[in-house]
Each structure stands twice: as structure tokens, then as C-alpha cells.
Length: 329
Image 1 (cartoon, rainbow, N blue to C red):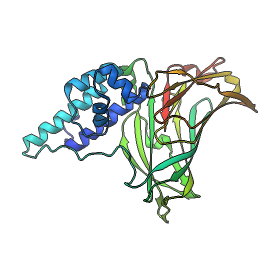
Image 2: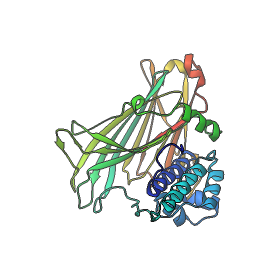
Image 3: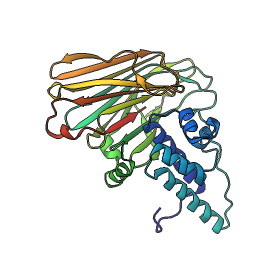
Image 4: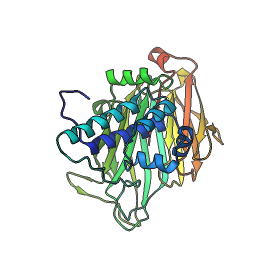
């Protein structure tokens, strides 16, 4: 933290810490249970830490950073928390614990399910355009007014210190993402929840300057959002995380056929390490594009599905693709 900047509050420091921990766990494709076991902690303790209900500690931060090979990113967020706590104590302000954060990010009484989840990634040789369509149903008793999405990238997954340095010098920006979202033919406003160099959390809002269109109990609605990431920040694998009950999950990858792409995938669950997808992606040719489609019904909650690829005939800038990665949810 810059000494010339106003210190952040203890509550914000805890939120930043929780977001950093969750980001690195997801980048590494580990469930909370798997990470807790590797660190020697109870899974419930890890859940409380990611939810911001437990204060960060030096021991936990050191073990998490080492286990996730996070290049001291988690350790640095703990140091930010300690600075914020010391500043609060030094100015006679009480260092109160943060307000509990509910695991379900939506309104009490709401219960979202995803009836159909369709994602498409298009690569043009320079940038990736991600388009997500989701059919949401509110099975609860209260209207839903917002929907949480996450974008996480890692340029050098095998070298976190180099990756962190890369994003400090070349952060993922809102301008380059050009995020758009629609629902019922209406533009959805959005608000940033977390804005870090390689990780974004965004609330898509069921409203705009013309009015509100909440998702009421018993209703279903399609939402669509899309964004762009250059290929120096997003690359040769794409991971999906199932955070809400889902009926069908579909992923399409579309690459220039001239690159001669090949695609494969793995699945990670709460109880098992990464294993090959149970069914292979299906290839089809569409003019100058080669499209790979993978579909699964009723995926397990908290499962992660990772599709990876390589180009056997790289052209131009595509020669730099190996070793990059990205996720969106």
C-alpha cells in the first residue's frame, strides 16, 4: 500500500484478502475442501475466511500462499490488513470485526438456479471475445435484483511472481473488457465489486436509466453478457465453475481453422482431483472457423470444468499462446 494513499479500512482489507484467497484457489482449480486438507485446516475455517467472517492470520496466510503458489499475493493482502488494523488502533478507532458476509450473494429469500448455461469463446488471432447466456429461474420468495459474475486471468500459471509482475505492469482494465450485458432486450447496468489487476467481480443489475426489471419468484429469464480480453492476458485454457444449481452446461470454443487447434478438458469436483472430461468436445467446421462444443447435464455444484487447447500451426501473434489461462463465471 502506498504510504501517500489514505489507509483502507479494516473491513475493506478483509474483503480484499478474502477475494485474493478465493481468486488463487480458483486459478489453481482447487475446491475449498481440497485446499483446507492440503493446508491442514478444517474446511469450515477456510469457508469462514473466504466469506470474511474470520480475521486473517499470519500462519494461515503463509500456508495459503505456499500451497497455492501465489507469489506472496495472499501474504501481501494480510500485510495490508495488518496495516489497516494498526492504523485503526493508532487513531483510537475500534478495530471491529467485519460484518458477516453471507455465502449466497443474493437477497435473503431468493434462490437462483441456472436452467441453461451456454458460453462461447471466439478467438480472432489477437483477442478473445467471451459471450455468456444464462437462463435464470428464481425459485425463492423474494425478487432478485442483481447477479454476480467473476473474471480471473493468469498469464504465467507456473510462475506466480512473474504473473503478478505482469499484471502490475499490464493490468486487466474495464476499458479493454468492454463489458456489455442485456436482459429481456434491456441493457443491464453493472457495478464493480472487486477490481484487481487480474481479477474482477461485477454485479449485473436488473435495471438501467429507463427502469427496473427484477426477476420475480417463479419467473425465468435469459441474461447475456460479453467482454473481450487480449491474448497477452488470456490464453490457452478456459475454466468454468458451477456456483449455482445448473440444469445444462454448454461450452463452445471457436478458433481460426488455419491455426489447426486441438482441444481437451478436465473436471474437478469437491471430492476428486482433476480427471478427464467424461465425454470429449465435439469438433465441427464452420467456414474458416473450427468449433469445439462440449455439453453436460446437471453438473455437480462447485465442480470446475477446464477446456484446454493448443495450436499446431501457430500464425503471427498466436505463437505466444502457450502458458496463458483464463476463467469466467
